Length: 512
Picture 1 (cartoon, rainbow, N blue to C red):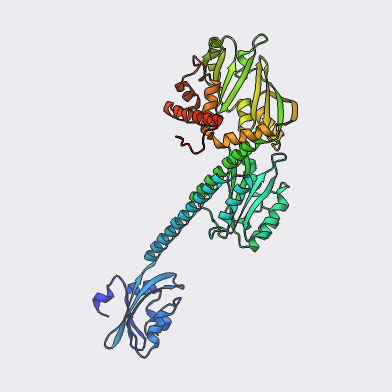
Picture 2 (spheres, rainbow, N blue to C red):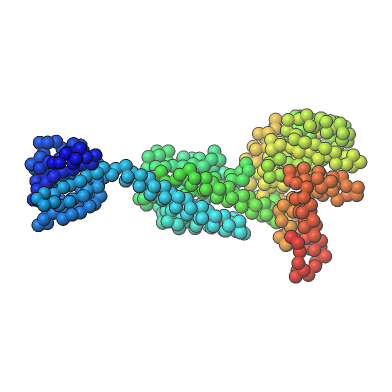
C-alpha cells in the first residue's frame, strides 16, 4: 500500500480482483474492528455484514464494480460510507465513519416530526376551540371535543367524563376511537375508588400524564389489559375546570410510550380550560333559564367577615348586589349607615381590596372582596346570591344554585373560608315560564356577557341616578378595565336594551 494511503485519515483496504485482502491501514482496522491476522483473508469474511449486503454484492459479480453507498453494520454498530474503486490489478476500498452524520440527521428528522406533530395538534386544538365556543349545549361540547381528538391520526381513543355534582363521580358523556373494551373498563371503575388517572385529575384538579400504561400498577389491571389489547401505551387526562370548580375530565390515549410532550400537554390543557369555561357558561345559562332552582339559605358564623366587622346589634349591613369579576374578586354593593367611617374600617381588612362611598345620602358603599369570602365562593360555584345581611357575629346569605349542584361540596367550599357554616333552609323554587322565556329571548338577542356585567355594575353603583353616585372611571376601576372600554360597553349595551324595549325594526343597523 502506498504511503499516502497508509496514513490516510479514512479507512483504506487493498484487495485482489477476486476479493482477497492484501493490505489495510490503521484507520480501516480500527473502523472494521479486525487486526493484521485477518489479512490475506477473503473480503467477505473480513468486512462485517451490513443490513442490505451492498458491499458483498460488489464482489459477487465477475469483476468488482465501482460503487459508493452508505449502510449500517450491526456487528460494529456503525454507519459506514463505502467506496469500491477497481484499479488495474487490484481493488481499493475506502471506508468512512458516518455515525455522527446519521445521528445528526436522526435528530433533525425527530425535531421535524415533533414540529409537524405540534403544528397538527395546534391546528386540531384551534378547530376544536372554535367549535366548542359555538356549541349550544354540554353534550355538544363533549361530543365535539371527543370526535375531533379520537378520530385523528395522532390519538387512538378519547373520552370525556362529566362530574356528577351530586355525588362527585365521573360519568362518560362522549367517546371516540376504536377502543370499546377500554371504555367498558373505565365505566366499570368510575363509580369506585379505583385509582384511575381520571379520578386523580378530578381530586387534585391537575393534569395527569401516564407515559407507560402497562407499568402503572395504580391503574386497575382490567383497564391496563384492555389498553394493551388495543395497543394503547400512554395517556393524558386534563381537568375541565373553571375557577375553583372541576366539571369533568378529558382523557386522551395514544399508541406510543412517552406519547405526550410538554408543549402537547400545554395545548391540551388550553383545550381543557376552554372546555371548562364552556361548560360553566352553559350551566349558568341553564340556571338563568331553569324553571326550577334550589334556594339555599346559609348562616355564616364568623365575626371576622369583612362586612361583619362593621356591623353590630344596632347597625346591620345589607347586600344590594354583587358582581363576580374575572380575577375572582367580587364587587359588592352594600347599604350601611356611617359610610365614611365604615370605609376606613373595611380597607384595613386583609380580604378587602378597596372600598368607597357611592352615595352618602343612600348609604351605599362599593366594596371589593377577595375570593376567600363566602360570597365569592358561592359565585365561583355557579350560585347567584340573592340577598345577604351581615350582623356583628356573621351573616345570613340566600343564594340560588342549579338543582344538580353537589350541595355538600358547595357548602364545604364556603365553610373553608368561614369559622362555621349552617344550612338553615333549602327549597326548590318554581319560576314563571313566561318570564323566563321572555328574559331568555331578550338576553340572547341583545346583550353580550361583558355588556351585561358592565350594565349591572353601573346600575348597582348608582351610575344611572341623578346626580350620579359613580362616574364611568369609578365603574371602570370596579371592573379593573379602562374608562373608554366601560363607555364603549355602556353605550352599546344601553342601545341594545332600548332597541329591545321599543321593538325597533330588526333590519335597523346598530353599532355593536
